[in-house]
Image 1: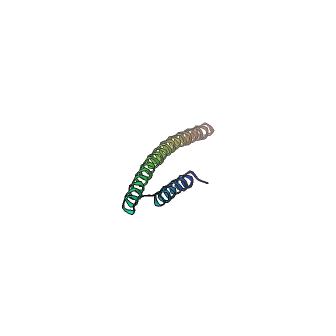
Image 2: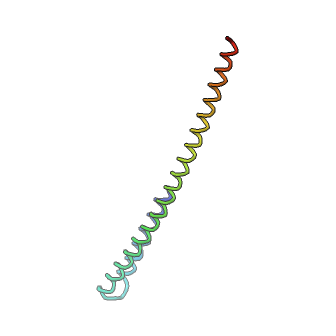
Length: 95
């Protein structure tokens, strides 16, 4: 199972547990609804924070891949130039 599925499963289970706990608590409906709303807002805020961190990690990984790809491209071009120059040199020697 992927990390995101595990994260969302834990998040949803915790939210459901908190909501069920509040519904069965011996308080009046107004207080219970306020607690559920506050809890839901807190969970949503934490989920957004986790997504922002994940977005940053993905962006960092993409930047790293682009940098590595550009480096490999430069290496390949240099090798192709060297091979071409060697081939030209060999052809000139044969003339």
